[in-house]
Length: 193
Image 1 (cartoon, rainbow, N blue to C red):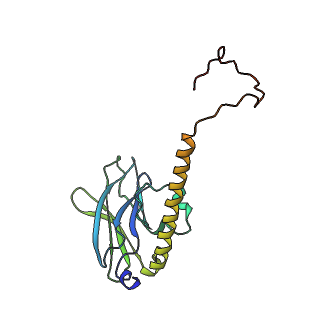
Image 2 (cartoon, one colour):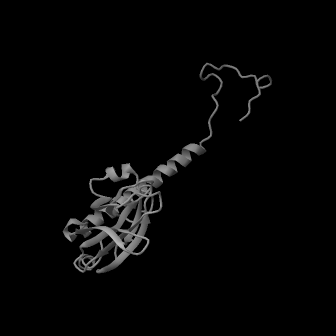
Image 3 (spheres, rainbow, N blue to C red):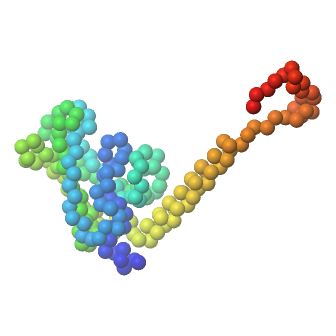
């Protein structure tokens, strides 16, 4: 299995977009080399003067990434690179265009760039990055992550099961003589359950 994993991407590689979500670029288990994938994004606020693209390596989860999740683990989701550019001019939200491209070479190194794109098709400032395979997750680390994820899911299922059982429990009335109640006259005190 380790020999096969040497020719594949070990974990998913994504970038962080507005709303603390991860936009997947390279799927885990993709066979090497992985061809270039480019996506175009816009600025997310008025008068934005630049952008920093955070590149993460993580498990396949599709839920939004929260700050707690990013700080939770010592390793994953793991920030593996940053690329930043400054815009030539500011503009209103949604006007500026930014191209982000990521790919993996035959050795397993992750390459990428971010550049400003103008409406006439020309390009502005560009920033590139390279992350060596030795800095990425190993197959052994992936096995540990998969086991930890299984334990987390099992604990979550158990917790949900316990909550359902707790919510289904019917409250009980005290019997006469308990909690200072000696006699209950049901003809005068009607109770609804």
